[in-house]
Length: 188
Image (cartoon, rainbow, N blue to C red):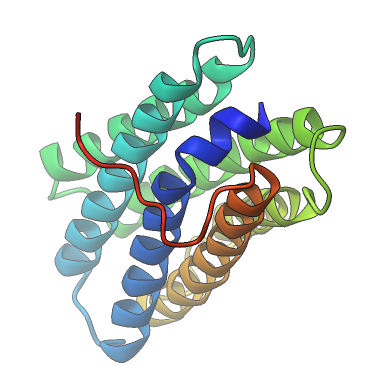
Protein backbone atom coordinates (compact mmCIF):
# COMPACT_ATOMS: atom_id res chain seq x y z
CA UNK A 1 0.00 0.00 0.00
CA UNK A 2 2.89 2.38 0.77
CA UNK A 3 4.30 1.68 -2.68
CA UNK A 4 0.98 2.58 -4.26
CA UNK A 5 0.70 5.83 -2.29
CA UNK A 6 4.38 6.50 -2.87
CA UNK A 7 3.97 6.42 -6.63
CA UNK A 8 1.33 9.15 -6.47
CA UNK A 9 2.65 11.15 -3.53
CA UNK A 10 2.47 14.18 -5.80
CA UNK A 11 -1.35 13.93 -5.98
CA UNK A 12 -1.50 14.16 -2.18
CA UNK A 13 0.94 17.06 -2.30
CA UNK A 14 -1.17 18.92 -4.89
CA UNK A 15 -4.26 18.44 -2.72
CA UNK A 16 -2.32 19.91 0.21
CA UNK A 17 -1.03 22.87 -1.81
CA UNK A 18 -4.52 23.66 -3.14
CA UNK A 19 -5.89 23.52 0.42
CA UNK A 20 -3.21 25.92 1.71
CA UNK A 21 -3.79 28.36 -1.17
CA UNK A 22 -7.55 28.22 -0.60
CA UNK A 23 -7.04 28.83 3.13
CA UNK A 24 -4.75 31.80 2.57
CA UNK A 25 -7.21 33.36 0.10
CA UNK A 26 -10.03 32.99 2.64
CA UNK A 27 -7.92 34.73 5.32
CA UNK A 28 -6.58 37.48 3.07
CA UNK A 29 -10.07 38.44 1.87
CA UNK A 30 -12.22 38.01 5.00
CA UNK A 31 -14.89 40.38 3.70
CA UNK A 32 -15.57 37.99 0.84
CA UNK A 33 -19.23 37.69 -0.12
CA UNK A 34 -21.13 34.48 0.41
CA UNK A 35 -21.37 33.92 -3.34
CA UNK A 36 -17.60 34.21 -3.72
CA UNK A 37 -17.13 31.91 -0.73
CA UNK A 38 -19.38 29.34 -2.37
CA UNK A 39 -17.41 29.56 -5.61
CA UNK A 40 -14.05 29.25 -3.82
CA UNK A 41 -15.30 26.33 -1.76
CA UNK A 42 -16.94 24.64 -4.76
CA UNK A 43 -13.74 24.95 -6.80
CA UNK A 44 -11.58 23.68 -3.95
CA UNK A 45 -13.76 20.66 -3.18
CA UNK A 46 -14.10 19.82 -6.88
CA UNK A 47 -10.31 19.89 -7.45
CA UNK A 48 -9.71 17.95 -4.23
CA UNK A 49 -12.27 15.34 -5.29
CA UNK A 50 -10.72 14.95 -8.75
CA UNK A 51 -7.25 14.38 -7.32
CA UNK A 52 -8.61 11.95 -4.71
CA UNK A 53 -10.26 9.92 -7.49
CA UNK A 54 -7.10 9.98 -9.62
CA UNK A 55 -5.09 8.79 -6.65
CA UNK A 56 -7.62 6.01 -5.97
CA UNK A 57 -7.51 4.86 -9.58
CA UNK A 58 -3.72 4.60 -9.40
CA UNK A 59 -4.03 2.55 -6.19
CA UNK A 60 -6.69 0.04 -7.18
CA UNK A 61 -4.30 -2.74 -8.24
CA UNK A 62 -3.46 -4.93 -5.26
CA UNK A 63 -5.17 -2.63 -2.76
CA UNK A 64 -8.51 -3.81 -1.44
CA UNK A 65 -9.22 -0.47 0.30
CA UNK A 66 -8.68 1.87 -2.66
CA UNK A 67 -12.43 2.48 -2.76
CA UNK A 68 -12.21 4.61 0.42
CA UNK A 69 -10.20 7.25 -1.43
CA UNK A 70 -12.46 6.87 -4.46
CA UNK A 71 -15.51 7.46 -2.23
CA UNK A 72 -13.86 10.53 -0.68
CA UNK A 73 -13.28 11.93 -4.17
CA UNK A 74 -16.84 11.21 -5.31
CA UNK A 75 -18.26 12.93 -2.22
CA UNK A 76 -16.01 15.93 -2.87
CA UNK A 77 -17.08 16.20 -6.51
CA UNK A 78 -20.77 15.87 -5.63
CA UNK A 79 -20.55 18.61 -2.99
CA UNK A 80 -18.52 20.82 -5.34
CA UNK A 81 -21.01 20.40 -8.20
CA UNK A 82 -23.99 21.01 -5.88
CA UNK A 83 -22.32 24.21 -4.72
CA UNK A 84 -22.10 25.44 -8.32
CA UNK A 85 -25.57 24.24 -9.36
CA UNK A 86 -27.33 25.97 -6.44
CA UNK A 87 -25.53 29.33 -6.04
CA UNK A 88 -28.63 30.92 -4.55
CA UNK A 89 -28.61 28.64 -1.52
CA UNK A 90 -28.72 30.34 1.83
CA UNK A 91 -25.63 30.44 4.00
CA UNK A 92 -27.32 27.99 6.33
CA UNK A 93 -27.61 25.26 3.69
CA UNK A 94 -24.12 25.94 2.35
CA UNK A 95 -22.70 25.53 5.82
CA UNK A 96 -24.32 22.13 6.13
CA UNK A 97 -22.89 21.11 2.73
CA UNK A 98 -19.47 22.11 4.03
CA UNK A 99 -20.04 20.37 7.38
CA UNK A 100 -21.22 17.13 5.74
CA UNK A 101 -18.25 17.10 3.36
CA UNK A 102 -15.77 17.74 6.19
CA UNK A 103 -17.25 15.01 8.42
CA UNK A 104 -17.31 12.42 5.59
CA UNK A 105 -13.78 13.34 4.52
CA UNK A 106 -12.58 13.08 8.12
CA UNK A 107 -14.11 9.64 8.60
CA UNK A 108 -12.60 8.34 5.35
CA UNK A 109 -9.16 9.75 6.22
CA UNK A 110 -9.29 8.14 9.67
CA UNK A 111 -10.16 4.80 8.06
CA UNK A 112 -7.24 5.15 5.65
CA UNK A 113 -4.87 6.06 8.52
CA UNK A 114 -5.94 2.97 10.47
CA UNK A 115 -5.26 0.87 7.38
CA UNK A 116 -1.78 2.39 6.98
CA UNK A 117 -0.73 2.08 10.64
CA UNK A 118 1.11 -1.20 10.05
CA UNK A 119 2.78 -0.07 6.84
CA UNK A 120 4.39 3.30 7.65
CA UNK A 121 5.51 5.25 10.67
CA UNK A 122 3.75 8.49 11.56
CA UNK A 123 0.47 7.69 9.83
CA UNK A 124 -0.88 9.96 12.56
CA UNK A 125 -0.46 12.85 10.11
CA UNK A 126 -3.31 11.48 8.00
CA UNK A 127 -5.29 10.62 11.14
CA UNK A 128 -4.75 14.15 12.45
CA UNK A 129 -6.00 15.65 9.19
CA UNK A 130 -9.05 13.38 9.48
CA UNK A 131 -9.64 14.58 13.05
CA UNK A 132 -9.24 18.20 11.90
CA UNK A 133 -11.87 17.57 9.21
CA UNK A 134 -14.24 15.99 11.74
CA UNK A 135 -13.84 18.80 14.29
CA UNK A 136 -14.29 21.42 11.57
CA UNK A 137 -17.47 19.76 10.26
CA UNK A 138 -18.95 19.31 13.72
CA UNK A 139 -18.21 22.92 14.72
CA UNK A 140 -19.97 24.24 11.62
CA UNK A 141 -22.96 21.90 12.09
CA UNK A 142 -23.35 22.84 15.75
CA UNK A 143 -23.08 26.62 15.26
CA UNK A 144 -24.20 27.45 11.68
CA UNK A 145 -25.33 30.96 12.59
CA UNK A 146 -21.93 32.06 13.88
CA UNK A 147 -21.64 34.61 11.10
CA UNK A 148 -20.17 34.61 7.63
CA UNK A 149 -16.92 36.30 8.65
CA UNK A 150 -16.25 33.80 11.43
CA UNK A 151 -17.01 30.95 9.04
CA UNK A 152 -14.62 32.36 6.42
CA UNK A 153 -11.85 32.54 9.02
CA UNK A 154 -12.65 29.05 10.30
CA UNK A 155 -12.62 27.67 6.77
CA UNK A 156 -9.34 29.46 6.03
CA UNK A 157 -7.57 28.15 9.13
CA UNK A 158 -8.95 24.64 8.60
CA UNK A 159 -7.83 24.57 4.95
CA UNK A 160 -4.30 25.69 5.86
CA UNK A 161 -3.97 23.13 8.69
CA UNK A 162 -5.45 20.36 6.52
CA UNK A 163 -3.20 21.29 3.59
CA UNK A 164 -0.02 21.34 5.69
CA UNK A 165 -0.87 17.96 7.23
CA UNK A 166 -1.61 16.49 3.80
CA UNK A 167 1.68 17.86 2.41
CA UNK A 168 3.59 16.38 5.35
CA UNK A 169 1.84 13.04 4.81
CA UNK A 170 2.68 13.12 1.07
CA UNK A 171 6.35 13.68 1.85
CA UNK A 172 6.28 10.92 4.46
CA UNK A 173 4.71 8.45 2.02
CA UNK A 174 7.18 9.42 -0.70
CA UNK A 175 10.09 8.84 1.69
CA UNK A 176 8.64 5.54 2.97
CA UNK A 177 8.38 4.33 -0.64
CA UNK A 178 12.01 5.28 -1.26
CA UNK A 179 11.24 7.76 -4.03
CA UNK A 180 13.82 10.57 -4.46
CA UNK A 181 12.48 14.08 -3.83
CA UNK A 182 12.94 15.26 -7.43
CA UNK A 183 11.16 12.29 -8.98
CA UNK A 184 7.85 13.54 -10.35
CA UNK A 185 6.24 11.10 -12.78
CA UNK A 186 5.90 12.06 -16.41
CA UNK A 187 2.80 11.58 -18.50
CA UNK A 188 2.92 8.34 -20.46
